[in-house]
Amino acid sequence: MSRIRSVTTSAAGVNRRTVLAAAGAVSLSAGVGYALRPTDSQAATPAGAPVARSRQASAAAPLAPYTKGTTLASVAAPRNGSGYRRLGDGPGWKRVVRDELAAPRSGRAGRRTALAAFVQFTDLHLMDVQHPLRLEYLRSHDVHAWRPHEALTVPGAISLVERVNALRGAPVTGAPLHFVMTTGDNTDNNAHSELEWFMKVMSGGRISPNSGDPGHYEGVQNSGLKLYWQPGSATRDHDKALGFPHLEQFLAAAVREVRSPGLGLPWYSTVGNHDALPLGCYGSHGDRYLAEAAIGGKKLMSVSAADAKKLQDAIKNAKDPKGAGYRDFLKAHARSMRSVTPDEKRAPYTQADYLKAHLDPAHQGHGPVGHGYSSANLDAGTQYYAFRISDDVIGISLDTTDAGGHYEGSVGTAQLKWLDRTLKDNKDSYAVVFSHHTSKTMTNTRPDPARPGERRHDGAEVISVLSAHANVLAWVNGHIHKNVITPHRASGGRSFWEISTASHVDYPQLARIIELVDNKDGTVSLFTTLIESAAPHRTDYADLSQTGLAALYRELSYNAPGANTTLAGGAADRNTELVLKKG
View 1 (tube, helix red, strand yellow):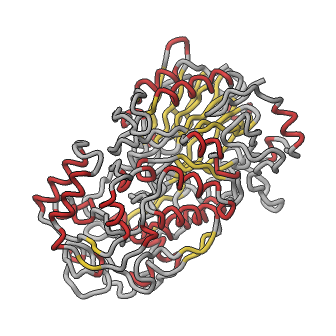
View 2 (cartoon, rainbow, N blue to C red):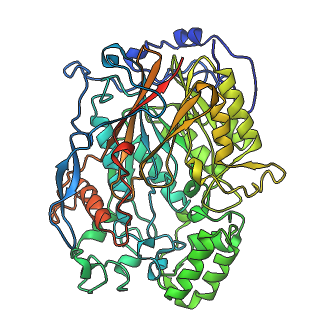
View 3 (cartoon, rainbow, N blue to C red):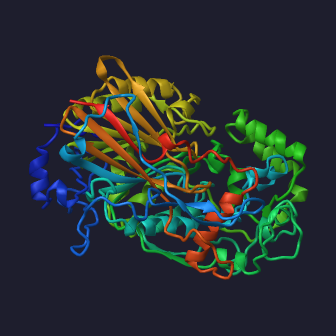
């Protein structure tokens, strides 16, 4: 009988089937996201609480394999050949069978049974674009350091929620979807304003994606600076010279109240560097000057290309992990700052704030309580946990951020030992591991200020732990904003797939459905299917409704100057069947 050990305790397990029966659980085929008692899992609901359930398919639409609403059917594609390109409906992406880790056997489609199915969101980067500490001015050196679509992250994310709510189930098996997992960088600037927007996007509510002046946008896009797209003015800025449109009411629409229906599924949360660190890179929570600047009334909007390069190089090369150099940079450019309306909602949030927001009943949505996190995480100062996905599968959410600063990741010794122990304790269950960072981007082993004596471990060491356990099927992550699927093979036939998914801020703005199936022939298959938001591929510049803005969000991201055009990955990184040999 498998059990999940708590992050902070190793209390003896309980009989899981008894717990499920007491909670009134139904079978896996009915689509349940199982949650155990707090003694068994950091993802548990309070004892005696109802089990979080997946959204059920309607009787009028029986579950069956399908392609509609996925990138198997259609993907946004340019309609014209040069300059600023309008989007329309393009051909879908075919499914590719990956056999590097096991040979697919004929007839498996008729034998297979569903183990679990879920959706991965990653790198939503919900942005308070008027925040005083933002680094837009780096665009004078690196054109992609600021993107013309950034004011539309909230309606774009809501449209992704709408897409998931419209899905009929898992595309390959037709099984109900169990949950959504978001693998970090849910917010962009580590601001309370953004954290509130994220919680409401996921669980439902009304959102005003605005800060500062409640009735007026104050930021780089009405600054008159040609460095940025000025949608509402006649200024011939650099982006309009590339074909970006004149949209007089764009900024008023971008800060207007919108409504999220919230996910119709339970959802879980994994933390990323932009959630844990101011601007995603600075371990500066104790810096009084930067904390006051975040809520203050001055904003830097332009610097020379040479100064921008110097600051960007310091960030990329981890020369300023604590933000002391950034503080000095802002002080040196104080006379160049512009006045904006102060707002305390822009204050940086701490790890405890992040956990409390998830535990807040106002943001419960379809559950589970805490969205994976529990009061034990709050007490221990941890952001990793395990949860039961189904009878045969557990999920493990890691915290790969480093509070010491810099945007690359690592894990501490305590967490790595907990991961190994949790996999051992659940050797009779398959395991899916979630994190923000990929194995190759876990290169930052800077000490955590809260645990200065604890060693930090890189991605190769995490791979070593995962490879030691035959029950690991997949490591699902984000961070790199690109679709990449990597096979990992170890001795003794142990193997797993690392599934890295593109962001929802950079084009092509995707999320991923992952299905786990037992082929009943000694192999397991993981099916990955990418989805776009529910917004139409074609935009209408006269339509600045919530849906119209989400469509514009995609088109602007496609045309963003300097954007990486390879983020969709190759065909073998998109819609796939990933075969594993498993007992």
